[in-house]
Image (cartoon, rainbow over all chains, first blue to last red):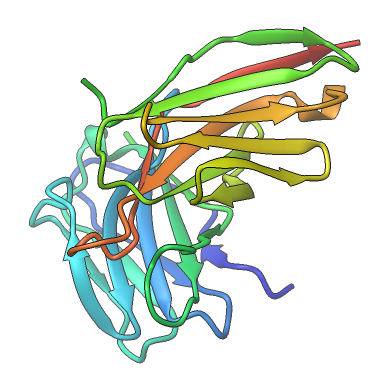
Amino acid sequence: DTGVSQNPRHKITKRGQNVTFRCDPISEHNRLYWYRQTLGQGPEFLTYFQNEAQLEKSRLLSDRFSAERPKGSFSTLEIQRTEQGDSAMYLCASSSRGGGFLRNEQFFGPGTRLTVL
Amino acid sequence: QKEVEQNSGPLSVPEGAIASLNCTYSDRGSQSFFWYRQYSGKSPELIMFIYSNGDKEDGRFTAQLNKASQYVSLLIRDSQPSDSATYLCAVNQAGGTSYGKLTFGQGTILTVHP
């Protein structure tokens, strides 16, 4: 399978605990995005990496959230001191298009569903 | 006003009919537009994208874009029960510092009944 993969697929944690999610993009893709989706809503942008550089972060990404892509391949998203409001599906997407972003087809992984008790 | 608006539905059509899904956006700087399908409990799956005014066809799907009216639509011909899903419209500003992030509507639930 050469698609985007995410682990774990499900995570249940208690409020106040830290969690970390991993995303492995499609191998030749240099662009990687994190989104969050709650029930009945479309995905909301969290952050973007081009290779290993984090180039954009949403205001939604509070200081409890941190994301890395250390070698420009896989990425991790960590949430510290989780809150019940963090319960959502965390989606990773990757894309590859030389030059501009006009035809920036993003392919999503299966997501990590987080439940904070 | 939301940046990307879709009628949440549900939209119910009989099998074999044409389903028409609509989306409006507020930012005139938006340059490309994507339609995703999302089955319950699954992640979004890219159907097609469009960035030029007019129609773009791919199999049973046709995307239509009217930048002057800030309107994009998706037509599904010969609808099948397997098309029953949530359809997400996404907009890409593709300029400045947007880095191609997608802004999604809330999605339209489509039900195709036999």
